[in-house]
Image (cartoon, rainbow, N blue to C red; front, side):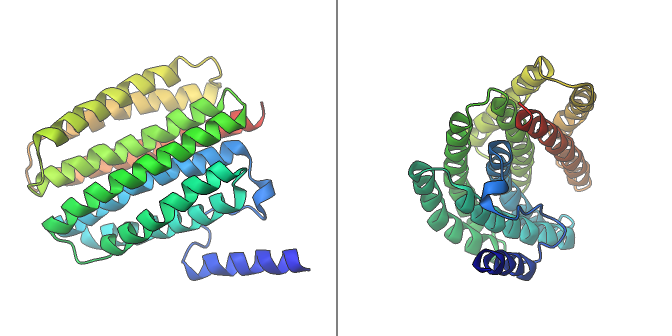
Length: 266
């Protein structure tokens, strides 16, 4: 009876956060596989970049209503997944990493919900790097603890989701006069990493027919997305880049889910 009550309270918490029908919530921490936990932790990486990206879009007046909705949705998703990962945590070392995330997350979330300004965008960018690093550490720990070789593919594919948002974030920051030589180096690093990781995934022997088809779509979308990042900063072009970014994200999210299923069945 106590377990049922706890699960009901947990679900009601998610309802209050506006997450109904948008998140697959396990009935208990024991039901979550390592593959699913790696996927969720990997999605946390992506959300750190997506939140800053949407914050900049609001400040730039790029589809502001949609950007505000996506910002709030991303914040709710990060919070709910953090709770799920805490419930899943398999050992004390993972507990410590999650405990380290929480104070960074609370400060980051408060700033992300503030009225957009160039000064705050700069601070938010610095803070999302800290969260990204902590989230990356968590993913690596879970991959190592899983003991399944295909967990690496879940990790790599999930990181591609993050890179798609990271590159778009940098595009928006440059559009908002926040560019710098250091940022240019990060853009080059993220671009090279995305290309290299995509090649790694394409060559993975574990690929099913469906995964191969999705990766072919990813290659085509990457060609368009990477080209759009280099367009002139005309006021109409951010919408093209944003659309290409969202399609890239959707493809890689599906690929990650497919690798998650492969890993669970190993």
